Length: 239
Image (tube, rainbow, N blue to C red; front, top):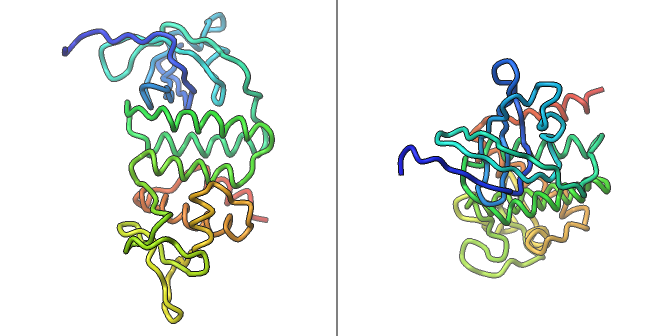
């Protein structure tokens, strides 16, 4: 019913981003297990004695209760759930990359409980020391959950992927088997496709080709919009 107050109690969530609103409040972009990406207002959260001031941290598991009628609901309560070490250094940067992907490509209020679980598990892995394979496997799950499902088991004609062959990955068709004299801007080995499907990127070549594939696919779905975290990473790599 239009105008009806919507109330949610004790929803598992992570803060993706916050920005100031008026003198003492915050707008919080959160990723909630059963509601997807939601916009919430934390009234008075910037006041020194606010109960929310030290709770609304990125990369920490929270339980949030909120209520409201409009697009931006109001936080009633937020509680830290613990169990997730604070991220620092490269792990912190990798976490910001995941958050930017969610902020830019995940539609508002589109539930993705499985992606929420993958996100939480990836943050736990980052705390032990981020591996590039963790990022690639999150990207795979992310694209699949958003409906951009990757075709990794069969080529565009329905034939099982041959690990000894090479494929051009076409976004609308999937893997297209290459002949020996064919050229492609992005040639992926069958082994890489099989390894990516299995979630095993221990082979350095599979890991490299998976990175190239994911970068190409994500750039396509971004529609030419660059990611700030990627720009910062490239700047840090410059001598």
